[in-house]
Image: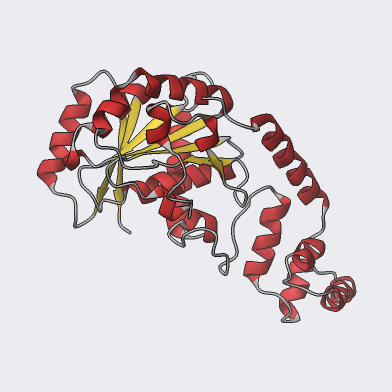
Length: 298
């Protein structure tokens, strides 16, 4: 896959980050429309007269909330997230809208373990599938939000929707469902142009599933899928692959064989124990690694 404009995108991300670190909290909030110039001047006077930090002075005056300060600090430290009024992405992407919530803290803890066990520089591994026994387990939710927290760490991250039966990443990221995606790439009808960079989340790109094909397992079994991962590994640090549920076929096992490892997702009070054990047995019977499991409570 010829990933378009990777060098330019990376340079732009570095430039944006550098500018963000050099700007004051007040300037960031003014540009974002959360504070006006008069309010900033009042805060600065309060800050100087009482020896407070800018944020503490602003909150004491009632001009800003803690969420506003968190927003500005995130911009200063290259940790982008979205305003709750932003409608460019689905609100189910909690890592993009509410990165300080307990759910996202758990995702960051999971990210840390994966960085040590799979994505470390020494291991040299880049791709990981997210698998689950059945639909409704939260597999796509975990895959999408995990990709976001990796991108927030500064990793160049690619999320591939390899669920060619019931894809959902295009809805989560509000992408054009008519645009070419993975199915077109694997059938030789598209290349790097199918990868979509998410402008509001620096470092994150998505390859949607595209049109639902009549032969998903056969497409994923083609050598083109392995070549896709190999080529993407040259441009990205982390590749997260969403897969079809195991109950619909062997697509997840095929994708995992290409990636080399998987992360298992089960949902509390939803996932059937028998299905879970069957999927674990099938993954352990292959030459791939099952890195661990996630109990989704959301």
